[in-house]
Length: 185
Image 1 (cartoon, rainbow, N blue to C red):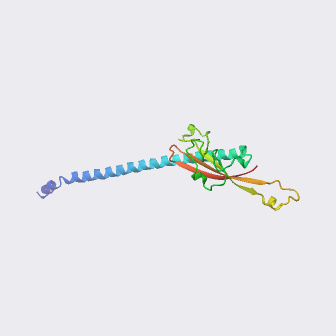
Image 2 (image 1 turned 180 degrees about the horizontal axis):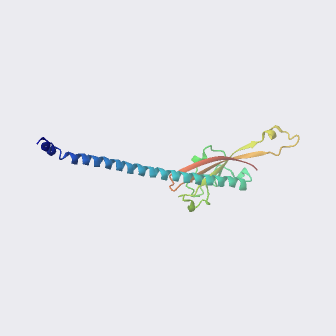
Image 3 (image 1 turned 180 degrees about the vertical axis):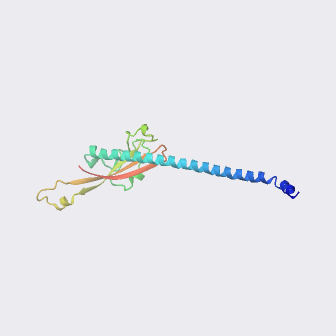
């Protein structure tokens, strides 16, 4: 008789425990889904930033090739920058340039690297500016002030700062790279 009474008292407990277990499993499943979604977003952002980095690096290499193959004088470098070539009048020109690259003819323009097209899955073509900021004389020639004897042939090295900006699939993902490039003109 004692067992019969105990049996009647425990009938609803299994249902309550089962519901609590179901709620706990549901919460664990929802947390797992949120974490998976968050990790997927992080992976997409990492890919987008990597694409922007590659675009900026390609523009920087194009700018260095531009210096090597096309720059024969420093006379094209000025303060207005309507052509993407700047002198050393502003230390942080990359903060002032119009990176939208609309080529409006206004001051602070950039050079658009058009070879990086839509096959690379970037939203906007990468851009760059080139600054001439120093002329460096070889130490051996610096001592030869009166040009006595023969020169070393080293001459003056012109120093340029290249600033390149690339974007990924989203224009809000931007990477800016800088390099220093020297060339004897």
